[in-house]
Image (cartoon, rainbow, N blue to C red):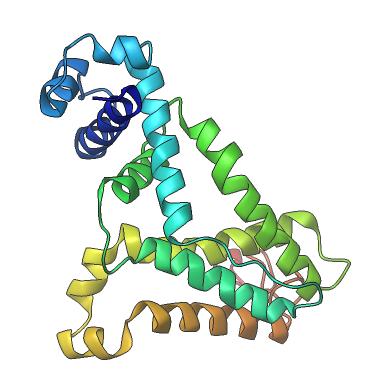
Length: 225
């Protein structure tokens, strides 16, 4: 067997086990046994378990990016169109009808229970996409919008997409079966999130902290007014 084939088998086997059990509970012995390889294979190809895990996370990221690549837009494309396409790509990555394999599960595990690999994942994968979203929002919001407000809007948009992955089972339990089938396709979810975001931005609720009631405003129930 070619060295690259062995390395790939190790990565895919390790990724599956890491996704199932997490980094701490997974052992090099189990990974090699399931891959049908000598117990020394991990040390030979990766050096140690930590490096193997990091490479498995990188492969998971690569597989998701290849399956649902971010769209490339021509110069001058309206930010509303770019936002719609961004949300659609994010939603499709989160709600993949055909692939719920180890790569998605491993990435979500890393997000929810970060390890040493999280910094690399954020730097190489999440940050470039988030900066793309920030650029889209900057083009849609007033120039005076503070950076922290734009960032919070970005987190809100991403959060809506991620919810359907993290709480997918809850969504299923809360939604009648016929409604789920007819109105909760990936396309419909993406369209809904986009409409919500555009409506909020156009209404002026996003991009300005003015007009939002403060917890200390006059007449608030907590101030005795």
